Image (tube, rainbow, N blue to C red; front, side):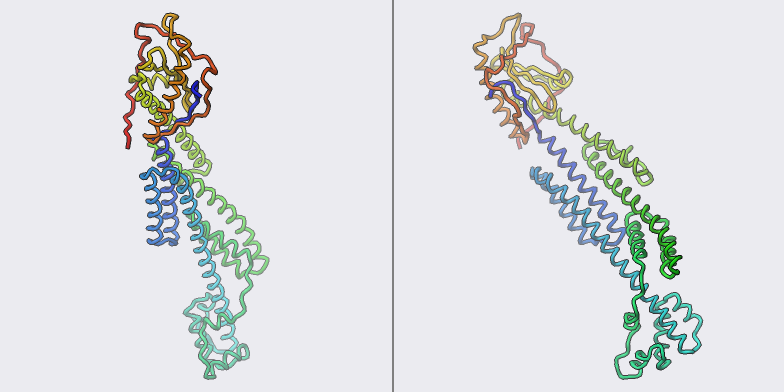
Length: 436
């Protein structure tokens, strides 16, 4: 297959750009993990050190040219940080729910203790009575001691008997656990869990109001409780949905902006006033930034591919002059002469994928003997192999996606003028690339 070829060039610079973008996204996820984790006191220094160590290991993959490994592992680390944060937040929420349940049980026990004391007929200290009504722990401890001094009462003869006998004295916690568990409306737990989740990820001005109404619902008559809970269900449901959407949009924007900065783009206009922007605006910024990254990256990649091909052909003896890269970009095609065979050369065209085909030069209607064209195509095949090897030595890659056999199509002949076979085209200085 020595005729015209369609090839895909992937340069080391292009791969590095992609890998740096992946690493930048890991950095953004790590920063978000630390910010929310510390806000909710669910990560410690040891976890931070371990996460930073994993991040540094990913950066080392780039230094070791293990680009494929980096592109596989970086998204896994990003997802791990996201999942790990959710697990930590869920654990905190579960602990808070358990604490609320204990507090509720203690309030119910304090209320039962107050009723038991009132049945004894002894006058109670007003402060103690108010403390028991509030479920104050100090008041319940005093009340429990006072109950032990009253002797057996009809309401709790078993407890009084234990106080009189030689059995180990019961603590208030033991007594509280022995009380019947209060019936809890599932909606109360559901609303409480929503409030907790919202507070974990967003500033929540309504939290005090919601908690107050939730506490009211816990002790309110059934009709009143249902009215309060129905309203809280609607309000907290909407707030949680909005908070989740906003947090997800901001996280996506931060990740994309980190990638954009790694690519060298100015992200100021996208980052301005993120905290006050609406979710729709945040999503629009993220989409615009992502599009700009692709455009910027593709432009750099095309430039790097062209420079790589021209440099490789120059090393194979083709007459490459400064400025040809710009000429190729502006005109969409470029013709280069072989120094060893001045009447033959190669035509390059394209951007994402390049078409490379051998050509013959005619001057004033005269050119090389067509019988030599097959030999020129065979030599060109060897040049393509040499180009592939040179690119590989520099960390680049060349993949032939389409090739025609020798003689499949007549060799393209290009009419040129001038005694030197054609005018030179000016272009910028080619990049300097070295073997490592």
